[in-house]
Image 1 (cartoon, helix red, strand yellow):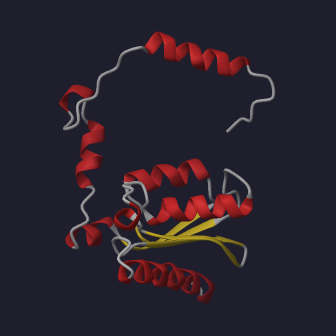
Image 2 (spheres, one colour):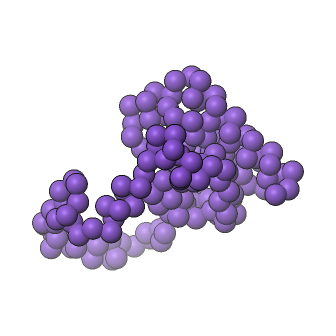
Length: 158
């Protein structure tokens, strides 16, 4: 990797260390880059914010989108200190950056006590076999909302 990528990855690792030492959460950090500028950053703040969704990538995506005044990260790069978990990966795909760089991988995280493998396994199971029970009902009324949305004038496609 180039010096540029190394600099931004180091920024993500520094954000991770800072958040960890402040007691915000686990050792995870992320920066979002557009061109040569960091436009968003975040550390894992699950413990500090009492928010299970406050993973570094999600916090950084929220920060970047706010700063860019956009719900998408078109043209951006994501630098994260660890391979994104399933939730963060979903958020990254919805944000649509052009590229993701990560340092440690999910196996490294697992060895440190951060194991998301059960989520990957759960997603493969039918609803009735999952650890958290999932029940589908009220589908007809909810599908009507999609139909109403399809007819809304001036809606933003995403």
